Image (cartoon, rainbow, N blue to C red):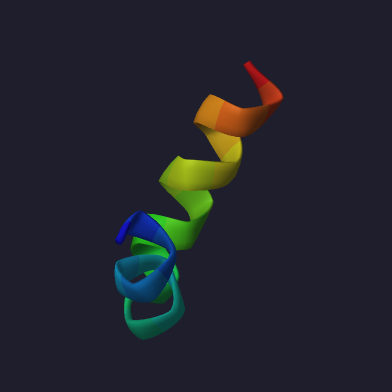
Length: 22
């Protein structure tokens, strides 16, 4: 799950938020 990686990787969270924000 992406969420799991995001929680583990703070850097990935930033990228994930970028995609969510579009």
